[in-house]
Length: 249
Image 1 (tube, rainbow, N blue to C red):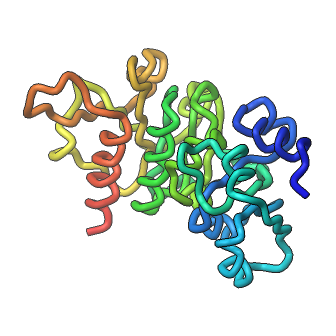
Image 2: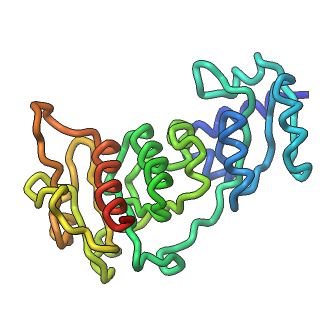
Image 3: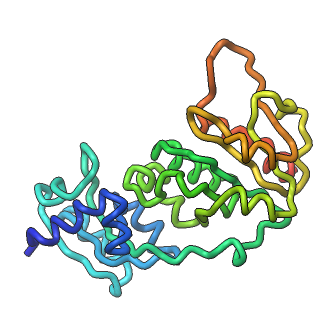
């Protein structure tokens, strides 16, 4: 029996306040849910339609399953076209900055990225290029926002996301700090070396002046055409490709 209280709880998880209060977030779609099952995350409950039941028989029996109708699924989904299943997942305790190794690798630093789609795409891009850590300013969009989770296509299960005061963090780190800035060295000729922080800024304002002062090397993607600006998620993908790709060779 799918109760009104369950529907109320699940719909409330669309909002950050209630995600934090209940310690849960939503993952939609069988494929994405499987990514979290095979990770350090703990699945609380999977709500599913009868059509997907045969697939779920292959999953761990330690998970709570609840079969619901398509109409009920539509009530709790944040998508226009709901997927076949929705899972509630426990929000984990992320490792702190002292618990992750940032040496001999590249990490992303996001200064005020606000758009859920951009954040999700950046996480997915980081996963593709093997970047394990993303350090975010405290005012960046919540990674458990359903739109962010959906845009990661399961990659959130493999990338560490840490929120912190970027000024304090970068001031104390002993690594090269590459900033995506307009007046910087051409990204295609820049030598990224084998490690460092790649700082990407807010969609409208870029990297804040206080953070710019901590950048040890400004790097720019040269504009060849006439576009006014480049989407931050696309720009991040180019930076990842150039930095990690060159070191991969």
